Amino acid sequence: MEMKEQIINDIETNSIILYMKGTKEMPMCGFSNSVVQVLDHYGVEYKDVNVLTDPMIRVKLSEHSGWPTIPQLFVDGKLIGGADITMELHNKGELLDVLDITTED
Amino acid sequence: MEANKVKELITAGLTVSHVEVADTTGTGDHFSAVVVSDDFKELSLVEQHQLVYKTLGNHLTNEIHALQLKTFSKSAWEKINLED
Image (cartoon, rainbow over all chains, first blue to last red; front, side, top):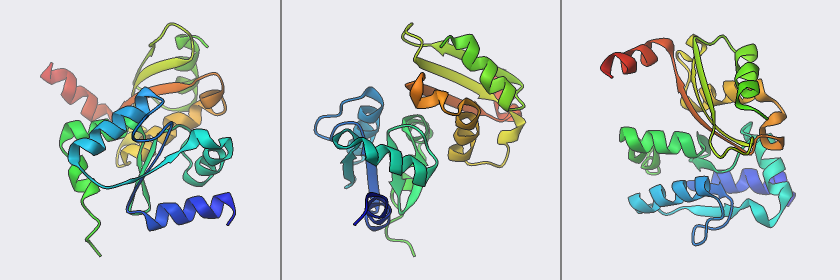
């Protein structure tokens, strides 16, 4: 599978997926880390993809999402945002609603 | 890049009523910004941030490594400042 297809497939088949620098066990960037901390706080299951393993992941991901920076959080195939938006939703108490939609439809 | 230059780019690309840009590390590549624009009305947060990203074009990810962003519509911004 080509990388772009792989990315689209991963986003569609994982209800929550986080593209980040490093892994959820060892984030390599403060912004990626803040999203990991919030997701772990809610105890949700999610797939992490380390964009540092191959520079092309980031290029192809941003082409697909129209979002230039990392991290990028997707829920049910939809871009939720980067670290700022995730933290803003968390602080407003809206993030759990956003994350807890896997049983809908 | 200097914070003022980032501010200029955002102001040039978007109808804003208020912009604050700060260099968070003093190294000219990590910034935080508050952007207030009526163009944000009715848009999702993702769409609001994308509008700001668009004003920075290739500067973002090249010279600008990180941009912490807070976006507000004019009415949301006025409400917050009244509460303060």
